[in-house]
Image (cartoon, rainbow, N blue to C red; front, side, top):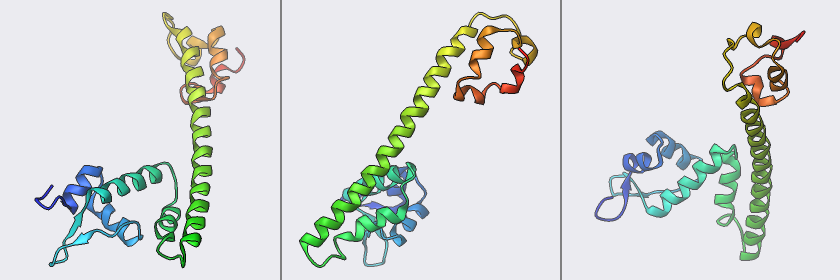
Length: 162
């Protein structure tokens, strides 16, 4: 950080793990307005970094930037505190619903992975080759394809006729 407590675009981008172009993009999308020097150089406050970390985290979860921009601009574009409060609350409600749907999907996928991990443990100690021929008559193998996550490892066609 510089003596004034502000970061250059390069340092801010490095801190966030993104390219400087990402920060410029977030700015053009209306998600933040960094301070500027007299020469126009962008300078980022710690609060800007916190905001960008949240934006990046939500975007990584698939939240559209337009929703985040609507939220970021909702207070400034409102005529009263009541209007702003209601708009922000409605946008947060919508965001929370989206995140809850994503969390449910993550839980479902996590359960599939855990089930697959549990089932594949039955293969420990097997000395047959892990091929359709080697696994064809294995009672464990026929159970493996019943787990969706195992479709990444075994093709159900590998066990047809077993």
